Image 1 (cartoon, rainbow, N blue to C red):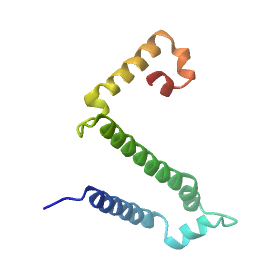
Image 2 (image 1 turned 45 degrees about the horizontal axis):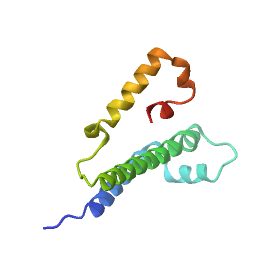
Image 3 (image 1 turned 180 degrees about the vertical axis):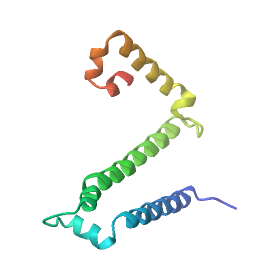
Length: 119
């Protein structure tokens, strides 16, 4: 029996999306969510939470998950190792060590950005 990881991933994504939308529907009915998307004149508190908190967080969660998955696939393909990940290769440990040293020795460098230090 062959397995299709892409179809399984899409199925899990669809299930997660349906659970997320079901939870949203308990907080804000679909009619109110539709009105919040079309910028009503006086939005309710629930509509403001939906447009200013829920939607941006869900969007960023999806984008970050896609980016992490993509970088993992690229790393595995570049190294030709299906088990390659930042923890097994020591990349995450090295980045953590660099951040720890900079935090102790030169905390002003953290203003530049943690991404540049750990890279």
